[in-house]
Image (cartoon, rainbow, N blue to C red; front, top):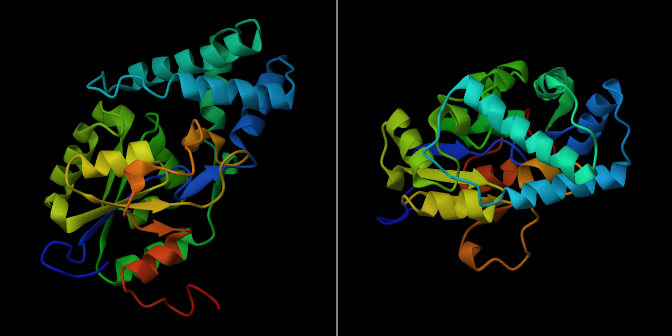
Length: 263
């Protein structure tokens, strides 16, 4: 990042989770369809992808908070979303064990792909003395998932919406993260893939945003991306754009470790 009195190098890097560090593997809809099949519900893959996209879109403007931050409330929110997907599909609502199975499936290591640049780039940023933290719209199990994926050790704080009671782009979740890290907004940047959630949200409290555009939307990135955002985004004007975390390392002016990032 350019260093100047108004745009100095950050000491803290906040990172989104879905479609920034990880994506569903092989896709959100594939994991979803597998669990449906285990419970005797067969669906057409294209119809399921459409139902998921429609439901994400319909929930795009849902309450940003404050809302109840508890494990039971988090589960009920996920269950409401899954119920809406099934209603769009015209499928009969299965009993509660289905929803528990779906929640458990997305907590498994096999359900997620860690982008190949992530471990090495995080290591380089840590080695340069940067403090790293997560700010993510995620269910209650987001913290445990980071441990399952062996990523948790990279982060000083993990701020998950369902454990805070605010969803991005609410300023509440960003202010909570700043308080946890003990820094002011001028000392931090936030990296994420959503203009609304990450760019607008970070700017609302004075954190400098960086937009990551991995090109993974659709099959792999459909969940975290929710409704696809237009390619022309006025709210992202002037925001640095990167393709992966190695671009972020370059943007921050850090040297790439040869053993971490082969040529």
